[in-house]
Length: 218
Image (cartoon, rainbow, N blue to C red; front, side, top):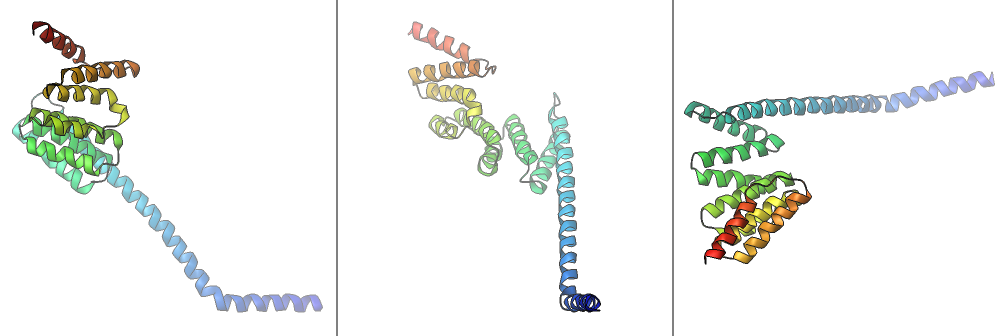
């Protein structure tokens, strides 16, 4: 009988506990389930957004990869860039789209638009390599516009993965400023870094050779 009373007491205790805590327990389970469902829904949404960005970027690459870009194709490419950057602004595809947009702008002789696209990548991208690419391209634009000192400042933030390319453009900037020795040193460094990392770097040796030829004439 003692055992029976103990079981009955335990049962009553469980009933009392459930009466006092059952509602909150159910609510907790429901919240947890909603959280899992919400997380899964968020993950699905992110995946679908990533797929949409990828598809749009692929369309953009297909368009800009043509030998000749007509007016209609150019307008569509610009629309795709806007769609990608507006709707997927923090993704890798947005950075890549802006880099392509800068190239299109240069081809259309629209340097202000090219600079704006590159500056956005530099300011907003969380990807060091792409930021470095944007800095290299912006520095080259600055050189074309006679801003060699500004180009040198722009190049300071280029990542080590692009050290050889950075050294080449540093040489270009130094040469534009009339600093022959610094230009030679930078170009030689570019060749050395390219060789160390097994990276092809075209045209730098020709710049060095041309520099030597000019010095001989003088």
